[in-house]
Image (tube, rainbow, N blue to C red; front, side, top):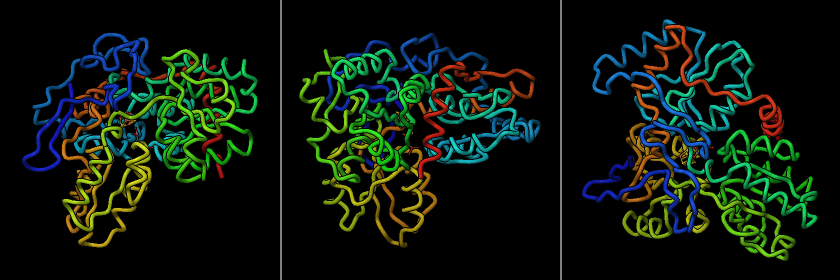
Length: 408
Ligand code: 13P
Ligand code: SF4
């Protein structure tokens, strides 16, 4: 199940998947986080349903040609979006690649495409469905491509937290902000309560917007992006932040802690970026003199604090594009992207920040056989794995997404 690989020669591999509730936290999981190879149902998950269909064998030597032929047959009717964490074998067929912010904008900007094939994870495909017209159909080639972080905030839990804030008399002065990496349900909740969606590219702008309208923010579901942005970019202190644990009574916080907090952080995290530790940073600095450490803001606070550069996947790409030849970089983000960047810049020394590394196993669910299958189904007149969001949820989620797209 785990999608592990070696960062360098002679290093050992540890078992891990992006679905683990690792990071040393005591999570009480109410539903299985990863479906075994996409079979079965998981009603507690942001993706939920099974992966049907007869997939071509991964060893089929004709897969590339079949994907090309199916895309050509569909022509302008199909638009393929590819997140930067996707495999090379898939990304070669993307009409556009990007981080979650760029892909949301690209989906919204393609009103003529009948089919949007989303090579990414479930919450991204949901956002694309919300931002496109009813006539457009969004397809996720493998429904098991969920996100363990998004699964860490479930609507009932968030409503319970909001009821608590209401009872304390602070809900009115609290603006909910959710990271793009959340289910449509959570985005709908945020829209209903006059909040905004953010991505790692615009989290500071979203928080600035929120603090112009309220005294506190409830930040969902990534504690690290919330904390890192508030403390390192907005001037708040760590004491201004509290951690709400949905598995503890009252979130594990006292009334006084709620009242004094500026940032109420949801206890969620990315299991891929959560792997990077301060020891990784110290170790690479010792091993590679002059190395620049570049990390994604989903990493833990102590890692981001110790790094030289911090930013979204688009920022990471631009930083490495602009780096001088001969410079050395240890990068703390998903491995498919780091590998692609290392291959694209042979004149620079680009390495993975951790010595034992893993891909995002759910992003990796989308492989060439699934893409070929999805495209060929469309050619045959069938729409596989369509992602739809119900009208009421979509309406409110859209207002939170539109608010994000309109941020100054
Ligand atoms: P961005 O695409 O916003 O950088 O987010 C990274 C990520 O983890 C996507 O799942
Ligand atoms: Fe979710 Fe992390 Fe994978 Fe992104 S990298 S899809 S946040 S588990």
